[in-house]
Amino acid sequence: MRLYGFLAAFTIVLCIFVPNTAHAQSSIRDAEIEAVVRDWSDPIFIAAGLRPGDINIHLINDGSMNAFVTRGQNMFLHTGIILNAETPNELIGVIAHETGHMAGGHLARSDDAIKKAMRPMILTMGLGILAAVAGAPDAGAAILSSAQKNATVTFFAYTRVLEASTDQAAANYMEATHQSGEGLLRFFERFRYNEVFSGATRYPYFLSHPLSSERINSLKARVDASPYKDVKDSPENIHKLAMIKAKIVGFLNPPETTFNLYPETDTSMPARYARAIAHYQEASTSIALKQIGELLKEEPENPYFNELYGQILFESAQADKSLPYHRRAVELRPDSPLLRLNLSQALIATEKPENIDLAIDELKKVLAIEKENSFAWYELSIAYERKGNTALAKLATAEQAYAMGDYSRARAFAQRATINLPQGTPEWRRANDITLVIASDPRIRRQAEQRQRRH
Image (cartoon, rainbow, N blue to C red; front, side):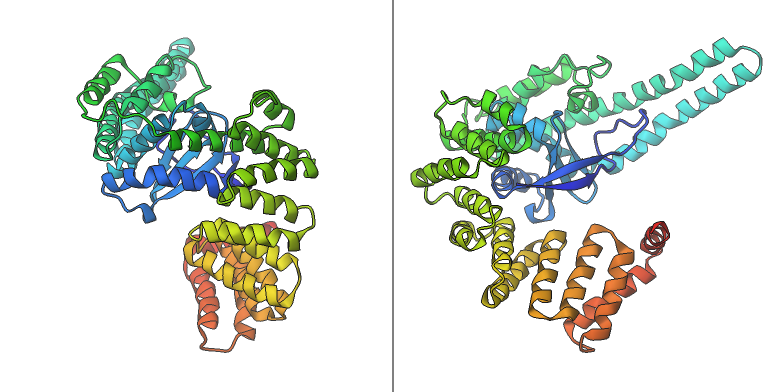
């Protein structure tokens, strides 16, 4: 599991009338969690008429219960919503609901609703200011304080209709994929007390998705009418959810918390998985390797047990010993760019010339799938530098900076790369393209200039 910095963006969460200060969060990249969520999401996307390959799913290290979508077909799931899902069906139901927002184009439609709600708010604020200026400060303050509330009421009147229609769409997707909608209904009913003006902030998902008895009853009628109402989660899916929960707890909590949640008396596989990760987190390497080794004996074909065993060896300065496990993980899950990235990192760390070439091949496969994976570009720049190919190393550094939005650095390294690369080659053209795009796009150019001034 890897953590990356993440800057919150405008979302369908729509807490529009509360001062919105975007704050830094951590995004998570983990091959196992992403694979499980993808296996459950892709059929829903297809049922909604969307192309799974066009949709990016982001995992956010945040314990609050939240899920949202943004423009560009991006779906965000907080770790809290995974941990609070009691069954896979509940989590899939939330994914289906958010898919409904994407399929319905609700972000664009919400812009109009925001404008409609803002007009009376601005007028009311104007009246409040006039009252204060006219010598009635108490009346002016009362009018001003009501402006935001009235706008919120107006906007949520719209969102209640929007959310109710999205509930129905989610139920349709669940039925189309032969799954019960009970999970989504149960998920909502468990937290229905978090109404829009309850003042509860623990579960922002329900503050931004206002619930009502009418909405829940309407969804219940739809779910009850489905021929798949009584379909249950498979034991395999239940096990998958338990495993990714254990992994989230093990990696994102202090070891003592994990040991409390998964005591030694719990001999289930998820519990042993969580404890092994916790031992790894507290640098008890020998214990972690022993416990993961025991899991590997039970499931030698599990790519993620192989991955974790290799990761522990790699981070214990045993890159050579980690290679068989990383290779096995890739063999078992060749479609995972993250597993290939782990393998390439271990290959580079061995500092053997023949392994550097293998790492470059693996990194090219990663980038063929994830063009904007900045860490893969970083590793590729190291690999080229080790080979003495400084021109391609500079280009890879430019690509890394471009993917991270550091346009001034991207332009600088792209320009250096064009000097050293043979003119007319695909690599030279790519370096030239980066330079030209940054120079011709006013928004990107301004960002580059601002960053350059700050430094």
